[in-house]
Amino acid sequence: MVKVKETYGVGTNDIPSECGSVAHGKWFKMLQRCYSPKQQELQPMYIGCSVCDDWLTYSKFKEWFAKQPHTVGVQIDKDIIVIGNKLYSPETCCLVTQRLNLLMTTKPKGKLLVGVRKDWFKFHGQIRVDGKHVHLGSFATEVEAHEAYKKAKVVQIKRWLPYVTYDMRIVEGLNAHIERLENGHD
Image 1 (cartoon, rainbow, N blue to C red):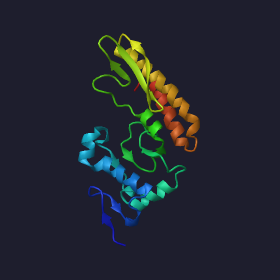
Image 2 (image 1 turned 135 degrees about the vertical axis):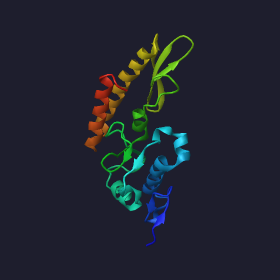
Image 3 (image 1 turned 120 degrees about the vertical axis):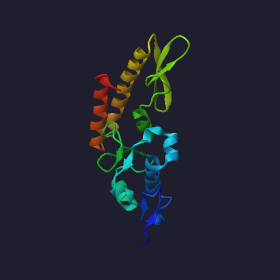
Image 4 (image 1 turned 180 degrees about the horizontal axis):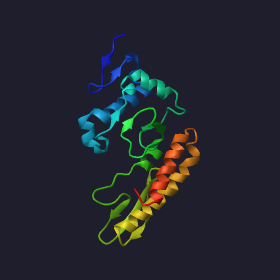
C-alpha cells in the first residue's frame, strides 16, 4: 500500500479509502489545529500544540478512536485530563460532547477576565450553560464578576460528573479543574 503525505507535511493517511469517515475527519481536524498556520491565526490557542508521533499515522489514531465508548457527536479534548496540555496523544486525550468541551474552554473576551462583560457602569458575570449565555449578576468590580463566573463554572462542571464515568480519566480531570477553580485559579 502506498503511504500518502497528507496534512501539512506531517500526517500520513495510510488508509486513503477512509477519507470522509468520522475518525478520519477528527484526525484531519486535529492535525489542522496543530500544524496549519492559517488555522492557528484563526484560533491562536492552538499555537504550540502538537500530535504524538503515533497519531501522525492515521491508522494508529483510528485504532485508538475505535476503542472509545462514544465516537458519534463528540470532540477530541486534550486538556480536560491534563490541565494546560498541548499534546494530542492516547494518554492525554478523550472524547467529549461539544457542550462539555465549550464549558471547559477558558478564553477571555478582549482584555476582561474570563466570564466577564462590561457595560458603561458595571461588570457582569456570565457563563454558557447548555449552549446559552446565563447572566450571573452585576458587580462593582471585574474581579467580583469573575469570581461569580468561577463559582458557576464549578457548579456546571459538577453537573457533568455523573455523565462521564465511562472514562475515569475525565472524572479525575474535571475534579482537578474544580479544585483549581476553588483554590483561586482560572
